[in-house]
Image (cartoon, rainbow, N blue to C red; front, side):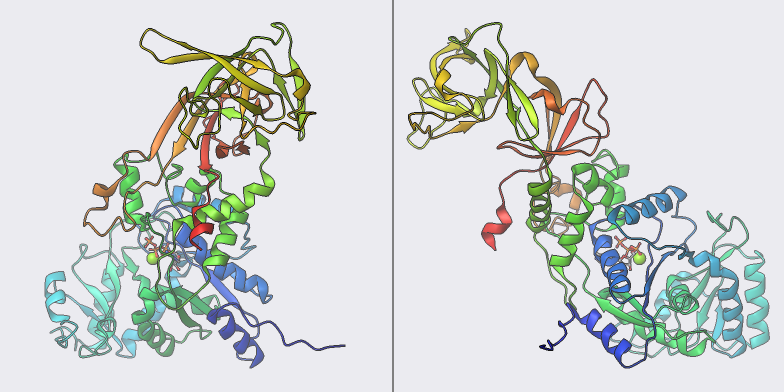
Length: 546
Ligand code: ATP
Ligand code: MG
């Protein structure tokens, strides 16, 4: 028997978790995914979800879903439901561990009073402008507020009256009393509570003060006994405050925060604020527009949970910011659909072909894969599979040339019919009955195999072809990302011709259209009118650059 060394953890977070488990610092790993319900989840969130739920699952722990609902003015119940749906769809379960920062408002308030009593927090009545000026800069220390040395009693009285709703928004804030000269601006007496006369989607009008994220987050982690609080790099500078609060509040556990690099994708904007603008200003049809990098958009585009999880796995978890090629995301879905999506034939830009020597009233049904495809005298082929006067490297159909129709027969083009303007409207051809099924007994091998659809059996479908939503790799570079929108990001084919086997396909069903790409049934479809979204083309740009 050989004893193999255990496999090395995949990333630095898993390394830390394994060390903590091995050293007994952690009995059972507990992570959390903490979305703010102010927008839909995007592919960047998927990375965080895969990490938090993944780590918990791999080490026999638990991952909580905690809504970070500390900002009543921007949050909506619609987002809460969408977020839960998206996480479950991605394949992760929080079990009974669904929490809200607002569940802890009472406890957070009690702890704030304790900080005041310990002279570690005070009510500041400076205006926002004054506070900004006194905060200092990266190179200059801040200045202490004239209210910093209020007595504990005065602070308690003011804070209680803030809570009671006696003051208008912005009249006072509660601040931690740390160090106005700290080189870390987050430690210069950060605001812990602000007055907000707003209705909260869970607590209603019970509160007129709301805790800041930086205050609520570490304490919520501690209440839930989170062991490893995983967040993105921009919170690195907030970690001293995180630790200060854990140190100075009598919390029931001591979570630690670890930062990893957020996911950045080229040709994509990811901030919820910008995605919201795209939706509100109607540059896209909604949060689930298939061009959006949201989970809902990717789902509608035809992405599968497995493809998204594999993508996140490939991207990995690192400590340094980087830019991921959106081609990798496309590669991940192609790889999945290549094995799972049934192949069908469809023609996006139909050109009619009449096979003169084929009987007019005959239909043959060719079995290919698990389906039957009808063949008849009049078929459609793709318009760009024919050129009347072909250049040297063009091997598809042209006058006098023979090609294979996939799974059917060889045909040879005999003549071209044009309208008065000279546009090609129809081709005539002959077929070779000896090539039934798409093979010739004499070993003839046409250089091209075309997809086709029998005209009388074809189903008309709308097909939506998507391209990248932005023209440049970094849409934010130019200043206004909206100036970089790609005007060609959606092209609608109103009447593509599809083989009849797709009749009745349910929304979100994926197919490979032979030679064209992967397509998915849009939820807008009805029994009479099927709409397809192109998920990706077949061409794999990413594997080539790799
Ligand atoms: P945005 O900047 O898009 O508004 P956010 O960080 O404000 O995102 P939250 O709802 O607070 O959105 O995010 C929930 C969790 O998802 C946080 O832990 C956050 O760090 C993580 N997250 C957000 N964006 C990314 C990303 N691009 N890559 C990895 N993790 C992310
Ligand atoms: Mg956030």
